[in-house]
Image (cartoon, rainbow, N blue to C red; front, side, top):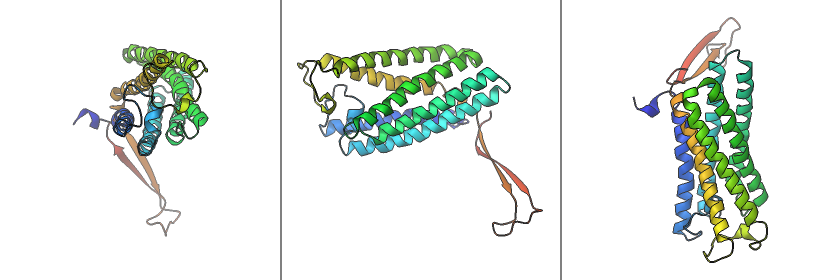
Length: 261
């Protein structure tokens, strides 16, 4: 059995690979069509103009679904491993809520492109990366309480994420403050000699760094998810859908995906 066939580890693996592919494929498409500059554009700029906008949107929507599934399975894992632990249970519920909000933000990014509704796109980015960073923090704290071996790896990723957010925030505020011109939101092509170009590059590099810090965090779930299985409990109250006598009850327990918790 290959490593990705063990338990549910394919979920975080698919989330990371698919999300990275959505960025890279839309970037390559935009470059080939000369819609953006090759040197480190904003991720959102790679999904602004058709046809790459369509590719960007549909792939990120699938990433949203994979993210929701991954966050849910992580919640159920912590819940199963720490019965009766009130502090862990509260952090786990908080982490689940934050993770779902972050995934919803990703859906907003996918469906409200930067040029279409800029402010909604910014809201989506804040939910995805801002709330997502708090989710990473909560999961890192849970790792300290439950999984000391993986804790330090997640601390490093958390610091990477935090530094990327800080760098992106400062550079973006400077860039859009009006010091370097107006209507920069609509600007897809930059000249290295232009005023504000260095700040622009710092901002875009920070955004790519932030995105891949998130993907790196979900990579740390792979080993944990190898020990998890998903089961469905089916309760039948009749021999067929038309005839359901009250006296008939049958239960079916089906293993959907291999592995164990």
